[in-house]
Image (cartoon, rainbow, N blue to C red; front, side, top):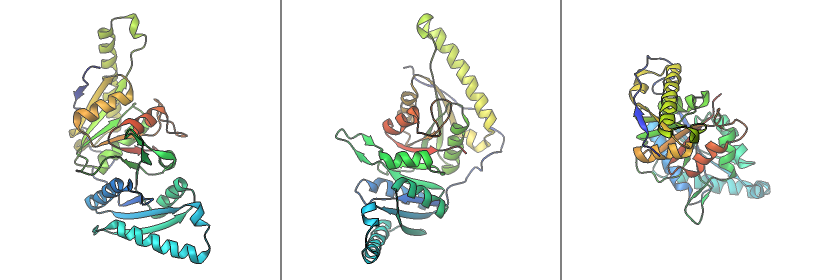
Length: 298
């Protein structure tokens, strides 16, 4: 695969999403397992960075939710204590919640009740090879959460200084770009589009690829022009038009830039469908070796 070409778009006129619009309330769902420490550390860092309210949620399993009243109250008191202990030295505004019901649906419901602007979660587990396993709860959140979902995979070492955004030139990928730019107003943004060449074997590969790359680069410029991005966002945005599969293209730019976060829309013309995660988004979620922000367009 050839190295991706990088272009910086001309700064746009002001308009559209506010330049700095970070979340005011973050919802962090925990099951108290050791794998939650990464996502909790990231949630607390973001809450401090944004001066945001942080809500810690634990959803009771069906077995414990069906306890007698006295036993349930004692269990909830114990869990509230565990949640408060999770905050540690975090000095910002905090709240603990215990809820009952199916985990994914309950997290979505509590996000609405608390006015959360972002849900933070981790992966379900790591398999014997150390790969990420998302799990049904994360799958449910990505499909149905009305607000962006941040899936934390890596240990917290720094802020998100570089962010890669996948685009298929759809409305939802535009929403992912706007959301990432607004949440992280100091980060460098890298917009990636992957392309294929139909019937590539029938004519010269180099000529064919060059023609298609120019065509897709022109589409990228049209796409960005239609977004009417503020000058501030345009000044920190680079574009990458890459030949190959979407997941490989995004991964290559993540590695080249050292990005700690990738942002994707959860439906669009290249497979990001509303009723399910979609094969492309699912592949990105499972294979990217960085944290992932998913954004549903409305």
